[in-house]
Every structure is written in structure tokens, then in C-alpha cells.
Length: 377
Image 1: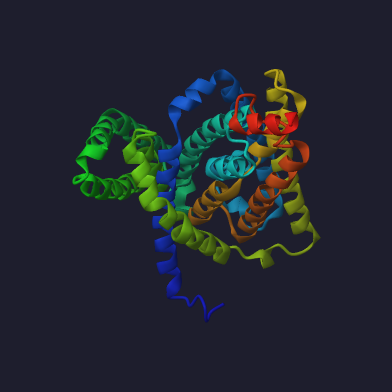
Image 2: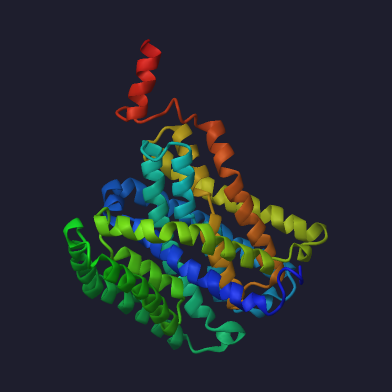
């Protein structure tokens, strides 16, 4: 390990991985269409609310158990530890869920659309809670002793930043998108360079406020008009580079920080089983019960619960921030990383087992028509 990853290489790896992460969150914001979330309306909102509140409460319960059983966990202030654990157990990885639904050919179905809208609501709520946790944690171990006024100031500054992005930057990006139509081929390069610089400046601004650079990049992604020529060109230019090279570096740096050897003894493995089962049960049950109340059939409700339990990359981001802010120690971090990996791995096989994609296509989708023709023949 020391030959492949010498000590001097770690800061370089982490810096490049952080830039990849900032651009990835920008892409998530760019692909997140707020108008489609509005169209899905109250049903998706209710499912997301139930799917975040029950696991959040479970997370608070888990936090109390971990503080008692993990050495050094009680050195962190109660408020930020409880909020971090709540967010860690209640988050849904919106980008990972989109990939899974696309692979299973479920994106155009009712389940897919509801899951995407609920996951988007869930992620926005989780980012707000995470911003709260970070402002409570402050910079490092000294966080708990800070004045609560600083936390309030950080949150208010964050709200002001988002308002500024929506009121001033959004119209500017609309103008840029109009300029980047096929007729104005020559100015395209300049605007794409300016946009990429804007991602870094937005990240720098939120980092300066004291939240995290990823929030700025995400907010900047939301300001860009969806579905036009400009957003398509941006995605074409940067998606392969970010997801093909920079993101794997982020996974590698997360893997290097995860010391699985810290989970030793029956008690530690017992804690891992408890965290996995609590996280999964909270998410699946919360979503399932609310989906049933919204008159969604039982099998579809259960599928939604399993889909919303996808933690994926977004969970790793939360955990890395927790470790960076000294809220999570090595053992808690390792347990939660394994939980994130497990809940993501089981999503696809479980959905395939309980919800056969071919049988349950959207009535008017092209796949259904082809399927019906074959059947008719």
C-alpha cells in the first residue's frame, strides 16, 4: 500500500478527488429538474417526507447506541452527532437511483417517476439538514465549544447565498443558454469556460461561508436551464471526464480512509448489523407505509421503499464530511461506509426479485407496444 499510495500522494489525490466531487454535484444540480418535481406533486412529497423522517428518528436512536459503545464517540457534541447520524441513515442517492432505474428500464414507469421525484425531495431536505450539521460541527473538534450564534450566522449566510443564486445568477444563466443556441457557435466555448469557472467560484463561496464547497456547486447547477442545447453541451463536455476519472479517485480516497480492521470483535460486528438493519427498515417501512396510504399497490410501494434505500455515493460524501469535521471517528466511519455499500448493492437484485420490469411497463411506452405486438403474434 505504501508503495502504490506513498504519504506525499494522499493530499494530491484528495485535492483532485474534491474537484471531481464539486463537478459531480454540479452535474447532479444540472440534471435535477425542479419543474418535474413540482409536477409529481403531493404524493412524491409525502412519500419523501415519510422516507426521511422515520429513518432520521432511527438514526437518532442509533447515535445513542454508538455513543455508548464506540470509544471516543462521546467526545463530540450531542447536537451535531445526532443530526449527522440522522442524515446518514435517511439519505437517498438521487444520481445512483437514476442509474439503477435506467438500467432496469423503469425510468418511464409510474414507479420510476415517483421514485425520482421523492428522491429529489429527499436529497434537498438531506442537504439542508447536512448544512445544519456542518454549521453545528464547525471546523474540527473545536466545533462544540463555539457560540451557537456562529451556527445561525452560517445558516443565514447559506440561505442568502441560495437566494442570490436564484434571483441574480439564474436569469444570467438563462441569457447565456439563449446565446448558446446553434446559431451562435463561436461564443459557445467562452460560455462553457465561464460556467466551469463559475462552478469553482460557487464552491469557494460556500466553503468561505463555512458550509461545504459541494453546496455551492449544487446550487449553481440548479440555476442552469434544463433540457436546452446549453445544458446538453455542458453534460457532454464534462460528464465522461468527471464520472470516468475524477469520481473513481474520490471512491479510492474514501477507501483509503476506511479502516475495516477497526471493526473487530463481536460487539463491533453486532453494531454493523444493527446499523444496516435499522437504516434499511426505517427507509423501506417509512416509504412503504406512506405509499400505501397514497393508494399505490403493495408491490409498487415495496419497490419504492427498496429504491429509496439506495445510499450510494451521496452517503459517502456525508460520511467523509463527518470524518473531516471530526464528528465520526475511524470505527463509526468504517461501520457506516460498509452500511452504505451494502444498502446500495442489494437494491438492484431486490427490485428485480419483487418487481418484474418487463411486465409492469407504462401502458403507453414504446416498450409496451412492442411487447404487446410480440404477444399478439
